[in-house]
Amino acid sequence: MRSLRTKLTVTMLFVIFAVILVITLLSAIFIRNTASRKSDQLLLMLCENGQYSLNYYFDSVQSSVNNITTFVEDDIKGLGDAEFKEHMENVREYFDFVISHTDGVLTYYYRIDPSVSSTEKGFWYTNLDGTGFVEHEVTDITLYDVNDTSKLVWFTVPKFEGKSIWLPPYVTDNLDVKVISYDAPIYYKGAFIGVIGIEIDYSAMAKEVDSIKFYDNGYAFLSDSDGTLFYHPYIDVANLPEGITKQMPYSNKAESSSAQYVYDGVLKEAVWLPLSNGMYLNITVPISETQGEWRGLIINILISAVIAMIAAGVFLVLTLGLITKPLEQLTEAAEQIDKGNFDVDLPYNMDDEIGRLTKSFKKLSGNMKAHINTLNEQAFIDSLTHVRNKGAFLLAIEELQEQINNGSVDPNFALGEFDCDGLKRINDEYGHDKGDIYLKKACRTISDVFKRSPIYRVGGDEFFIILKNEDFNNKDFLLGRLDIVIDEINASAKEPWEQVWLSRGFAIYDPTNDIIVQKIMQRADMLMYENKRERKMGREA
Image (cartoon, rainbow, N blue to C red; front, side, top):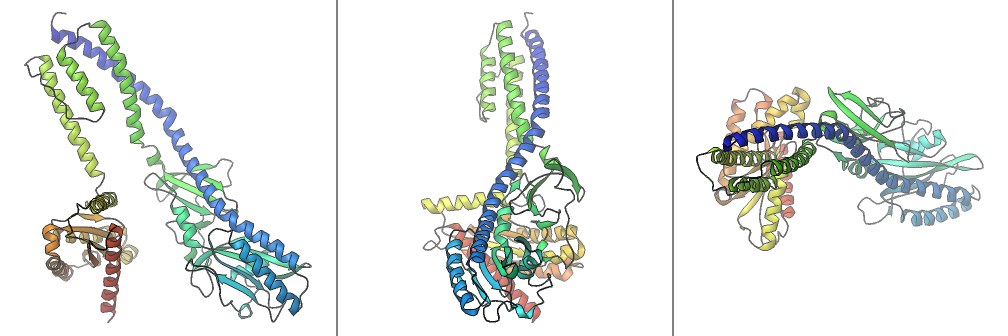
Protein backbone atom coordinates (compact mmCIF):
# COMPACT_ATOMS: atom_id res chain seq x y z
CA MET A 1 0.00 0.00 0.00
CA ARG A 2 2.33 2.72 -1.30
CA SER A 3 -0.48 5.17 -2.14
CA LEU A 4 -1.42 7.59 0.59
CA ARG A 5 -5.00 7.38 -0.65
CA THR A 6 -4.98 3.60 -0.28
CA LYS A 7 -3.43 3.76 3.19
CA LEU A 8 -5.93 6.40 4.37
CA THR A 9 -8.85 4.57 2.77
CA VAL A 10 -8.10 1.27 4.46
CA THR A 11 -7.15 2.83 7.76
CA MET A 12 -10.03 5.31 7.97
CA LEU A 13 -12.58 2.69 6.96
CA PHE A 14 -11.45 0.54 9.84
CA VAL A 15 -11.31 3.51 12.25
CA ILE A 16 -14.71 4.85 11.19
CA PHE A 17 -16.26 1.42 11.57
CA ALA A 18 -14.66 0.93 14.97
CA VAL A 19 -15.62 4.42 16.21
CA ILE A 20 -19.22 4.09 15.05
CA LEU A 21 -19.50 0.62 16.58
CA VAL A 22 -18.02 1.63 19.91
CA ILE A 23 -20.03 4.88 20.12
CA THR A 24 -23.25 3.08 19.26
CA LEU A 25 -22.70 0.33 21.83
CA LEU A 26 -21.57 2.62 24.63
CA SER A 27 -24.31 5.15 23.91
CA ALA A 28 -26.96 2.44 24.01
CA ILE A 29 -25.61 1.23 27.36
CA PHE A 30 -25.48 4.74 28.81
CA ILE A 31 -28.94 5.67 27.60
CA ARG A 32 -30.55 2.43 28.72
CA ASN A 33 -28.93 2.34 32.16
CA THR A 34 -28.88 6.01 33.14
CA ALA A 35 -31.68 7.94 31.44
CA SER A 36 -34.63 6.42 33.30
CA ARG A 37 -32.78 6.04 36.60
CA LYS A 38 -31.44 9.57 36.54
CA SER A 39 -34.84 11.08 35.86
CA ASP A 40 -36.50 9.10 38.68
CA GLN A 41 -33.71 9.95 41.10
CA LEU A 42 -33.83 13.64 40.28
CA LEU A 43 -37.61 13.73 40.62
CA LEU A 44 -37.51 11.97 43.97
CA MET A 45 -34.60 14.10 45.20
CA LEU A 46 -36.48 17.26 44.25
CA CYS A 47 -39.57 15.94 46.00
CA GLU A 48 -37.54 15.13 49.13
CA ASN A 49 -36.08 18.64 49.19
CA GLY A 50 -39.55 20.14 48.80
CA GLN A 51 -40.87 17.80 51.48
CA TYR A 52 -38.18 18.92 53.92
CA SER A 53 -38.82 22.60 53.22
CA LEU A 54 -42.62 22.35 53.52
CA ASN A 55 -42.48 20.08 56.56
CA TYR A 56 -40.28 22.61 58.32
CA TYR A 57 -42.86 25.27 57.46
CA PHE A 58 -45.89 23.22 58.55
CA ASP A 59 -44.23 21.57 61.56
CA SER A 60 -43.40 24.97 63.01
CA VAL A 61 -47.08 25.94 62.91
CA GLN A 62 -48.37 22.55 64.14
CA SER A 63 -45.90 22.43 66.99
CA SER A 64 -46.82 25.95 68.06
CA VAL A 65 -50.57 25.25 68.02
CA ASN A 66 -50.13 21.96 69.88
CA ASN A 67 -47.94 23.60 72.55
CA ILE A 68 -50.40 26.45 72.98
CA THR A 69 -53.34 24.00 73.15
CA THR A 70 -51.66 22.08 75.96
CA PHE A 71 -50.90 25.28 77.83
CA VAL A 72 -54.43 26.64 77.39
CA GLU A 73 -56.19 23.49 78.61
CA ASP A 74 -53.83 23.27 81.60
CA ASP A 75 -54.33 26.96 82.43
CA ILE A 76 -58.16 26.93 82.58
CA LYS A 77 -59.17 27.04 86.25
CA GLY A 78 -62.86 27.68 85.79
CA LEU A 79 -65.49 29.31 83.60
CA GLY A 80 -66.25 32.34 85.74
CA ASP A 81 -65.66 35.87 84.40
CA ALA A 82 -62.73 36.62 86.69
CA GLU A 83 -61.12 33.25 86.03
CA PHE A 84 -61.58 33.66 82.27
CA LYS A 85 -60.11 37.17 82.31
CA GLU A 86 -56.97 35.99 84.11
CA HIS A 87 -56.81 32.97 81.81
CA MET A 88 -56.96 35.20 78.72
CA GLU A 89 -54.04 37.32 79.87
CA ASN A 90 -51.96 34.20 80.49
CA VAL A 91 -52.77 32.88 77.04
CA ARG A 92 -51.94 36.21 75.38
CA GLU A 93 -48.50 36.19 76.98
CA TYR A 94 -47.84 32.59 76.03
CA PHE A 95 -49.09 33.15 72.48
CA ASP A 96 -46.75 36.15 72.14
CA PHE A 97 -43.80 34.02 73.22
CA VAL A 98 -44.59 31.07 70.95
CA ILE A 99 -45.45 33.12 67.83
CA SER A 100 -42.07 34.88 68.00
CA HIS A 101 -40.48 31.45 67.39
CA THR A 102 -42.86 30.37 64.61
CA ASP A 103 -42.25 30.96 60.90
CA GLY A 104 -44.76 32.39 58.41
CA VAL A 105 -47.63 33.35 60.79
CA LEU A 106 -50.15 35.81 59.33
CA THR A 107 -52.74 35.76 62.13
CA TYR A 108 -53.37 33.88 65.37
CA TYR A 109 -56.42 33.68 67.59
CA TYR A 110 -58.11 32.14 70.62
CA ARG A 111 -61.89 32.30 70.33
CA ILE A 112 -64.39 31.32 73.00
CA ASP A 113 -67.69 29.62 72.16
CA PRO A 114 -70.50 32.15 72.90
CA SER A 115 -72.36 29.42 74.81
CA VAL A 116 -69.48 29.23 77.30
CA SER A 117 -69.09 32.93 78.10
CA SER A 118 -71.18 35.93 77.15
CA THR A 119 -68.49 38.42 78.21
CA GLU A 120 -65.21 36.90 77.01
CA LYS A 121 -64.96 36.52 73.23
CA GLY A 122 -61.23 35.83 72.97
CA PHE A 123 -58.72 37.67 70.80
CA TRP A 124 -57.36 37.85 67.24
CA TYR A 125 -53.93 39.25 66.26
CA THR A 126 -52.81 40.01 62.68
CA ASN A 127 -49.53 40.90 61.00
CA LEU A 128 -50.55 41.92 57.48
CA ASP A 129 -47.72 44.33 56.69
CA GLY A 130 -44.88 42.38 58.31
CA THR A 131 -44.14 45.06 60.92
CA GLY A 132 -45.54 43.21 63.91
CA PHE A 133 -48.75 41.78 65.34
CA VAL A 134 -51.62 44.05 66.32
CA GLU A 135 -54.91 43.10 67.87
CA HIS A 136 -57.81 43.05 65.41
CA GLU A 137 -61.53 43.22 66.08
CA VAL A 138 -62.82 39.66 66.37
CA THR A 139 -65.55 38.15 64.20
CA ASP A 140 -68.94 37.98 65.91
CA ILE A 141 -69.52 34.24 66.21
CA THR A 142 -73.11 34.74 67.37
CA LEU A 143 -74.02 35.80 63.81
CA TYR A 144 -73.29 32.27 62.54
CA ASP A 145 -74.71 28.80 63.03
CA VAL A 146 -71.78 27.08 64.73
CA ASN A 147 -73.14 23.71 63.62
CA ASP A 148 -72.83 24.65 59.94
CA THR A 149 -69.29 23.62 58.92
CA SER A 150 -69.54 25.45 55.59
CA LYS A 151 -69.39 28.80 57.39
CA LEU A 152 -66.80 30.17 59.80
CA VAL A 153 -64.72 27.08 58.98
CA TRP A 154 -61.81 27.95 61.30
CA PHE A 155 -64.23 27.61 64.24
CA THR A 156 -66.91 25.15 63.14
CA VAL A 157 -64.71 22.48 61.51
CA PRO A 158 -62.34 21.83 64.45
CA LYS A 159 -65.36 21.90 66.78
CA PHE A 160 -67.12 19.31 64.60
CA GLU A 161 -64.00 17.15 64.06
CA GLY A 162 -62.97 17.29 67.71
CA LYS A 163 -59.27 17.32 66.84
CA SER A 164 -56.51 19.52 65.48
CA ILE A 165 -56.85 19.92 61.72
CA TRP A 166 -55.38 21.69 58.70
CA LEU A 167 -58.11 23.50 56.77
CA PRO A 168 -58.19 23.91 52.98
CA PRO A 169 -57.65 27.42 51.58
CA TYR A 170 -60.29 30.01 52.49
CA VAL A 171 -60.65 33.80 52.62
CA THR A 172 -60.28 34.88 56.24
CA ASP A 173 -63.06 36.95 57.81
CA ASN A 174 -62.83 40.77 57.57
CA LEU A 175 -59.36 40.74 55.96
CA ASP A 176 -60.15 39.45 52.44
CA VAL A 177 -56.87 37.47 52.48
CA LYS A 178 -56.60 33.90 51.27
CA VAL A 179 -55.08 31.69 53.99
CA ILE A 180 -54.72 28.15 55.24
CA SER A 181 -54.89 27.48 58.93
CA TYR A 182 -54.14 24.88 61.57
CA ASP A 183 -56.78 24.88 64.28
CA ALA A 184 -57.31 22.96 67.49
CA PRO A 185 -60.44 22.65 69.67
CA ILE A 186 -60.08 23.50 73.38
CA TYR A 187 -61.83 21.41 76.05
CA TYR A 188 -62.39 21.89 79.75
CA LYS A 189 -63.54 18.86 81.71
CA GLY A 190 -64.62 17.22 78.45
CA ALA A 191 -66.72 20.19 77.26
CA PHE A 192 -65.89 22.26 74.17
CA ILE A 193 -64.64 25.74 75.14
CA GLY A 194 -63.28 27.32 71.96
CA VAL A 195 -60.65 27.17 69.21
CA ILE A 196 -56.94 27.94 69.03
CA GLY A 197 -55.63 28.66 65.53
CA ILE A 198 -52.80 30.00 63.40
CA GLU A 199 -53.35 31.23 59.85
CA ILE A 200 -50.54 31.36 57.30
CA ASP A 201 -50.56 33.25 54.02
CA TYR A 202 -51.82 30.99 51.21
CA SER A 203 -49.70 32.90 48.69
CA ALA A 204 -46.54 32.31 50.75
CA MET A 205 -47.17 28.55 50.70
CA ALA A 206 -47.99 28.78 46.99
CA LYS A 207 -44.67 30.49 46.28
CA GLU A 208 -42.87 27.73 48.17
CA VAL A 209 -44.57 25.08 46.03
CA ASP A 210 -44.19 27.09 42.80
CA SER A 211 -40.44 27.32 43.35
CA ILE A 212 -40.20 23.57 42.76
CA LYS A 213 -39.53 23.23 39.03
CA PHE A 214 -38.35 20.30 36.93
CA TYR A 215 -37.50 20.41 33.23
CA ASP A 216 -39.48 22.92 31.16
CA ASN A 217 -43.03 21.86 32.07
CA GLY A 218 -42.61 20.05 35.37
CA TYR A 219 -44.31 21.50 38.44
CA ALA A 220 -45.37 20.65 41.99
CA PHE A 221 -48.78 20.65 43.68
CA LEU A 222 -50.37 19.61 46.98
CA SER A 223 -53.16 17.14 47.62
CA ASP A 224 -54.85 15.79 50.71
CA SER A 225 -54.84 12.16 51.78
CA ASP A 226 -57.98 11.44 49.72
CA GLY A 227 -56.44 12.68 46.48
CA THR A 228 -58.29 16.01 46.43
CA LEU A 229 -56.20 18.93 45.21
CA PHE A 230 -55.18 21.27 47.99
CA TYR A 231 -53.03 23.63 45.91
CA HIS A 232 -52.21 23.60 42.20
CA PRO A 233 -50.22 26.26 40.28
CA TYR A 234 -52.61 26.08 37.30
CA ILE A 235 -55.94 25.41 39.05
CA ASP A 236 -57.47 27.95 41.44
CA VAL A 237 -58.47 25.37 44.02
CA ALA A 238 -59.52 27.98 46.58
CA ASN A 239 -62.11 29.55 44.26
CA LEU A 240 -63.79 26.48 42.80
CA PRO A 241 -67.61 26.58 42.87
CA GLU A 242 -69.14 25.37 46.11
CA GLY A 243 -69.39 21.61 46.23
CA ILE A 244 -66.87 21.14 43.38
CA THR A 245 -63.48 19.53 44.01
CA LYS A 246 -60.62 18.49 41.79
CA GLN A 247 -59.29 14.96 42.12
CA MET A 248 -55.87 13.76 41.00
CA PRO A 249 -55.77 11.33 38.04
CA TYR A 250 -53.83 8.82 40.15
CA SER A 251 -53.85 7.52 43.71
CA ASN A 252 -51.04 8.58 46.02
CA LYS A 253 -51.95 5.75 48.37
CA ALA A 254 -50.37 3.19 46.03
CA GLU A 255 -47.55 0.98 47.28
CA SER A 256 -44.97 2.79 45.14
CA SER A 257 -44.33 6.53 45.31
CA SER A 258 -44.42 7.12 41.56
CA ALA A 259 -46.90 6.67 38.74
CA GLN A 260 -47.45 7.34 35.06
CA TYR A 261 -50.74 8.83 33.90
CA VAL A 262 -52.32 10.76 31.05
CA TYR A 263 -53.54 14.32 31.62
CA ASP A 264 -54.91 16.51 28.82
CA GLY A 265 -53.58 14.00 26.33
CA VAL A 266 -50.01 14.19 27.72
CA LEU A 267 -48.30 11.16 29.23
CA LYS A 268 -46.76 12.21 32.52
CA GLU A 269 -44.74 10.79 35.38
CA ALA A 270 -45.37 11.80 38.99
CA VAL A 271 -43.71 11.19 42.33
CA TRP A 272 -45.13 12.08 45.72
CA LEU A 273 -44.18 12.09 49.38
CA PRO A 274 -46.33 12.63 52.48
CA LEU A 275 -46.05 15.85 54.46
CA SER A 276 -46.22 16.14 58.20
CA ASN A 277 -49.63 17.87 58.04
CA GLY A 278 -51.27 14.88 56.32
CA MET A 279 -51.04 16.29 52.80
CA TYR A 280 -48.94 15.01 49.94
CA LEU A 281 -46.36 16.88 47.87
CA ASN A 282 -46.63 15.81 44.22
CA ILE A 283 -44.17 16.58 41.42
CA THR A 284 -45.16 15.81 37.83
CA VAL A 285 -43.35 16.14 34.49
CA PRO A 286 -44.14 15.06 30.90
CA ILE A 287 -42.52 11.74 30.00
CA SER A 288 -41.39 13.24 26.69
CA GLU A 289 -39.14 15.63 28.60
CA THR A 290 -37.61 13.01 30.88
CA GLN A 291 -36.83 10.84 27.86
CA GLY A 292 -35.50 13.75 25.82
CA GLU A 293 -32.42 14.67 27.81
CA TRP A 294 -30.43 15.68 24.79
CA ARG A 295 -27.74 17.38 26.80
CA GLY A 296 -27.06 14.24 28.78
CA LEU A 297 -27.19 12.22 25.59
CA ILE A 298 -24.67 14.50 23.88
CA ILE A 299 -22.32 14.34 26.85
CA ASN A 300 -22.50 10.55 26.85
CA ILE A 301 -21.88 10.42 23.12
CA LEU A 302 -18.92 12.79 23.45
CA ILE A 303 -17.43 10.69 26.22
CA SER A 304 -17.91 7.61 24.07
CA ALA A 305 -16.37 9.39 21.07
CA VAL A 306 -13.33 10.42 23.12
CA ILE A 307 -12.82 6.85 24.31
CA ALA A 308 -13.21 5.56 20.76
CA MET A 309 -10.87 8.21 19.37
CA ILE A 310 -8.22 7.39 21.97
CA ALA A 311 -8.46 3.70 21.08
CA ALA A 312 -8.38 4.55 17.37
CA GLY A 313 -5.38 6.81 17.93
CA VAL A 314 -3.47 4.03 19.68
CA PHE A 315 -4.37 1.66 16.87
CA LEU A 316 -3.21 4.13 14.21
CA VAL A 317 0.06 4.83 16.02
CA LEU A 318 0.78 1.09 16.28
CA THR A 319 -0.21 0.19 12.73
CA LEU A 320 0.67 3.13 10.52
CA GLY A 321 3.92 4.34 12.09
CA LEU A 322 3.86 7.44 9.92
CA ILE A 323 2.05 10.58 11.01
CA THR A 324 2.31 13.42 8.58
CA LYS A 325 2.34 17.01 9.60
CA PRO A 326 -1.03 17.80 7.95
CA LEU A 327 -2.61 14.94 9.87
CA GLU A 328 -1.10 16.30 13.10
CA GLN A 329 -2.62 19.68 12.27
CA LEU A 330 -6.00 18.03 11.67
CA THR A 331 -5.72 16.21 14.99
CA GLU A 332 -4.88 19.41 16.84
CA ALA A 333 -7.77 21.16 15.10
CA ALA A 334 -10.15 18.37 16.13
CA GLU A 335 -9.04 18.76 19.75
CA GLN A 336 -9.64 22.50 19.58
CA ILE A 337 -13.12 21.99 18.16
CA ASP A 338 -13.84 19.42 20.88
CA LYS A 339 -12.99 22.19 23.38
CA GLY A 340 -15.31 24.61 21.59
CA ASN A 341 -12.67 26.60 19.67
CA PHE A 342 -13.74 26.62 16.01
CA ASP A 343 -11.20 29.25 14.89
CA VAL A 344 -8.42 26.83 13.95
CA ASP A 345 -5.62 27.38 11.45
CA LEU A 346 -5.15 24.70 8.77
CA PRO A 347 -2.60 26.04 6.24
CA TYR A 348 -2.26 22.85 4.22
CA ASN A 349 -3.89 23.42 0.79
CA MET A 350 -2.23 20.96 -1.57
CA ASP A 351 -4.42 19.25 -4.18
CA ASP A 352 -4.22 15.72 -2.78
CA GLU A 353 -6.22 13.49 -0.50
CA ILE A 354 -5.09 15.30 2.69
CA GLY A 355 -5.63 18.69 1.09
CA ARG A 356 -9.19 17.79 0.13
CA LEU A 357 -9.70 16.35 3.59
CA THR A 358 -8.39 19.60 5.09
CA LYS A 359 -10.79 21.66 2.97
CA SER A 360 -13.67 19.40 3.96
CA PHE A 361 -12.68 19.67 7.61
CA LYS A 362 -12.64 23.47 7.40
CA LYS A 363 -16.08 23.45 5.82
CA LEU A 364 -17.41 21.02 8.42
CA SER A 365 -16.08 23.07 11.34
CA GLY A 366 -17.54 26.22 9.79
CA ASN A 367 -20.93 24.54 9.41
CA MET A 368 -20.78 23.27 12.99
CA LYS A 369 -19.89 26.73 14.26
CA ALA A 370 -22.75 28.28 12.31
CA HIS A 371 -25.15 25.55 13.49
CA ILE A 372 -24.17 25.99 17.13
CA ASN A 373 -24.53 29.77 16.82
CA THR A 374 -27.98 29.22 15.29
CA LEU A 375 -28.97 26.90 18.16
CA ASN A 376 -27.73 29.46 20.70
CA GLU A 377 -29.81 32.15 19.03
CA GLN A 378 -32.91 29.94 18.88
CA ALA A 379 -32.59 29.19 22.60
CA PHE A 380 -33.47 32.84 23.26
CA ILE A 381 -36.40 33.09 20.83
CA ASP A 382 -40.04 32.85 21.98
CA SER A 383 -41.64 29.92 20.15
CA LEU A 384 -45.03 31.62 19.71
CA THR A 385 -44.21 35.20 18.72
CA HIS A 386 -40.62 34.67 17.45
CA VAL A 387 -39.34 37.69 19.36
CA ARG A 388 -36.74 37.38 22.12
CA ASN A 389 -37.85 35.44 25.20
CA LYS A 390 -37.53 36.00 28.94
CA GLY A 391 -34.06 34.40 29.04
CA ALA A 392 -32.81 36.89 26.44
CA PHE A 393 -34.41 39.74 28.42
CA LEU A 394 -32.66 38.69 31.63
CA LEU A 395 -29.32 38.66 29.79
CA ALA A 396 -30.03 42.11 28.33
CA ILE A 397 -30.97 43.48 31.76
CA GLU A 398 -27.84 41.92 33.25
CA GLU A 399 -25.73 43.59 30.56
CA LEU A 400 -27.40 46.96 31.22
CA GLN A 401 -26.75 46.55 34.93
CA GLU A 402 -23.06 45.84 34.31
CA GLN A 403 -22.83 48.94 32.13
CA ILE A 404 -24.48 51.01 34.85
CA ASN A 405 -22.09 49.57 37.45
CA ASN A 406 -18.96 50.34 35.47
CA GLY A 407 -20.22 53.69 34.13
CA SER A 408 -20.18 52.71 30.46
CA VAL A 409 -23.95 52.83 29.90
CA ASP A 410 -25.44 55.18 27.32
CA PRO A 411 -27.71 57.40 29.50
CA ASN A 412 -30.24 57.81 26.68
CA PHE A 413 -32.37 54.72 26.96
CA ALA A 414 -35.77 53.72 28.28
CA LEU A 415 -37.61 50.54 29.21
CA GLY A 416 -41.11 50.04 27.92
CA GLU A 417 -43.66 47.48 29.11
CA PHE A 418 -46.73 46.36 27.15
CA ASP A 419 -49.62 44.25 28.42
CA CYS A 420 -52.22 42.70 26.11
CA ASP A 421 -55.65 43.65 27.52
CA GLY A 422 -58.43 41.08 27.46
CA LEU A 423 -56.32 37.98 26.71
CA LYS A 424 -58.06 35.94 29.42
CA ARG A 425 -61.48 36.82 28.02
CA ILE A 426 -60.46 35.73 24.52
CA ASN A 427 -58.96 32.48 25.85
CA ASP A 428 -62.07 31.74 27.89
CA GLU A 429 -64.65 32.67 25.23
CA TYR A 430 -62.93 31.62 22.01
CA GLY A 431 -60.15 29.23 23.00
CA HIS A 432 -56.40 29.44 23.50
CA ASP A 433 -55.71 29.13 19.76
CA LYS A 434 -57.50 32.45 19.24
CA GLY A 435 -55.63 33.85 22.23
CA ASP A 436 -52.37 32.89 20.50
CA ILE A 437 -53.52 34.73 17.37
CA TYR A 438 -54.30 37.77 19.52
CA LEU A 439 -50.83 37.65 21.16
CA LYS A 440 -49.01 37.29 17.84
CA LYS A 441 -51.03 40.16 16.34
CA ALA A 442 -50.13 42.43 19.26
CA CYS A 443 -46.46 41.45 19.15
CA ARG A 444 -46.26 41.99 15.38
CA THR A 445 -47.86 45.43 15.79
CA ILE A 446 -45.25 46.47 18.36
CA SER A 447 -42.44 45.10 16.19
CA ASP A 448 -43.69 46.92 13.08
CA VAL A 449 -43.64 50.28 14.87
CA PHE A 450 -40.46 49.85 16.94
CA LYS A 451 -38.39 48.34 14.14
CA ARG A 452 -34.98 49.23 15.56
CA SER A 453 -35.53 48.13 19.16
CA PRO A 454 -35.34 44.64 20.68
CA ILE A 455 -38.68 43.27 21.90
CA TYR A 456 -38.95 40.58 24.57
CA ARG A 457 -41.87 38.40 25.61
CA VAL A 458 -41.38 37.96 29.36
CA GLY A 459 -44.80 36.56 30.31
CA GLY A 460 -48.02 35.21 28.88
CA ASP A 461 -49.28 38.59 27.70
CA GLU A 462 -46.41 40.83 28.80
CA PHE A 463 -43.74 42.34 26.54
CA PHE A 464 -40.73 44.55 27.26
CA ILE A 465 -38.83 46.81 24.87
CA ILE A 466 -35.48 48.56 25.26
CA LEU A 467 -35.42 51.92 23.48
CA LYS A 468 -32.05 53.32 22.44
CA ASN A 469 -30.59 55.62 19.82
CA GLU A 470 -33.10 56.72 17.17
CA ASP A 471 -36.12 54.96 18.68
CA PHE A 472 -35.37 56.60 22.04
CA ASN A 473 -35.15 60.06 20.48
CA ASN A 474 -38.44 59.45 18.61
CA LYS A 475 -40.24 57.77 21.51
CA ASP A 476 -43.27 60.10 21.54
CA PHE A 477 -43.63 59.96 17.77
CA LEU A 478 -43.46 56.14 17.78
CA LEU A 479 -46.02 55.86 20.57
CA GLY A 480 -48.34 58.11 18.59
CA ARG A 481 -47.69 56.01 15.51
CA LEU A 482 -48.51 52.89 17.53
CA ASP A 483 -51.91 54.35 18.48
CA ILE A 484 -52.65 55.12 14.84
CA VAL A 485 -51.69 51.61 13.70
CA ILE A 486 -53.80 50.06 16.46
CA ASP A 487 -56.81 52.17 15.50
CA GLU A 488 -56.43 51.09 11.86
CA ILE A 489 -56.18 47.43 12.84
CA ASN A 490 -59.19 47.58 15.15
CA ALA A 491 -61.27 49.44 12.58
CA SER A 492 -60.82 46.67 10.03
CA ALA A 493 -60.81 43.70 12.42
CA LYS A 494 -63.86 41.45 12.22
CA GLU A 495 -63.16 39.27 15.23
CA PRO A 496 -62.05 40.17 18.77
CA TRP A 497 -58.84 38.15 18.44
CA GLU A 498 -57.91 40.11 15.32
CA GLN A 499 -57.92 43.37 17.29
CA VAL A 500 -55.05 44.87 19.31
CA TRP A 501 -55.49 46.38 22.76
CA LEU A 502 -52.29 47.33 24.54
CA SER A 503 -51.59 49.00 27.86
CA ARG A 504 -48.14 50.53 27.95
CA GLY A 505 -45.72 52.18 30.35
CA PHE A 506 -42.33 53.71 29.49
CA ALA A 507 -39.67 54.65 32.06
CA ILE A 508 -36.62 56.72 31.06
CA TYR A 509 -33.27 55.97 32.70
CA ASP A 510 -32.34 58.54 35.35
CA PRO A 511 -28.55 58.40 35.99
CA THR A 512 -28.89 60.19 39.33
CA ASN A 513 -31.40 57.75 40.85
CA ASP A 514 -31.43 54.52 38.84
CA ILE A 515 -28.53 52.53 40.23
CA ILE A 516 -30.33 49.24 39.49
CA VAL A 517 -32.27 48.36 36.36
CA GLN A 518 -35.13 46.92 38.44
CA LYS A 519 -36.11 50.46 39.52
CA ILE A 520 -36.65 51.42 35.87
CA MET A 521 -38.65 48.22 35.32
CA GLN A 522 -40.79 48.97 38.37
CA ARG A 523 -41.57 52.47 37.08
CA ALA A 524 -42.45 51.09 33.67
CA ASP A 525 -44.68 48.47 35.32
CA MET A 526 -46.39 51.11 37.48
CA LEU A 527 -46.96 53.38 34.49
CA MET A 528 -48.32 50.47 32.48
CA TYR A 529 -50.88 49.62 35.15
CA GLU A 530 -51.77 53.29 35.47
CA ASN A 531 -52.34 53.36 31.71
CA LYS A 532 -54.43 50.20 31.98
CA ARG A 533 -56.64 51.80 34.65
CA GLU A 534 -57.05 54.98 32.61
CA ARG A 535 -58.00 53.01 29.51
CA LYS A 536 -60.47 50.94 31.51
CA MET A 537 -62.05 54.05 33.02
CA GLY A 538 -62.23 55.56 29.54
CA ARG A 539 -64.04 52.53 28.18
CA GLU A 540 -66.46 52.45 31.14
CA ALA A 541 -67.17 56.16 30.73
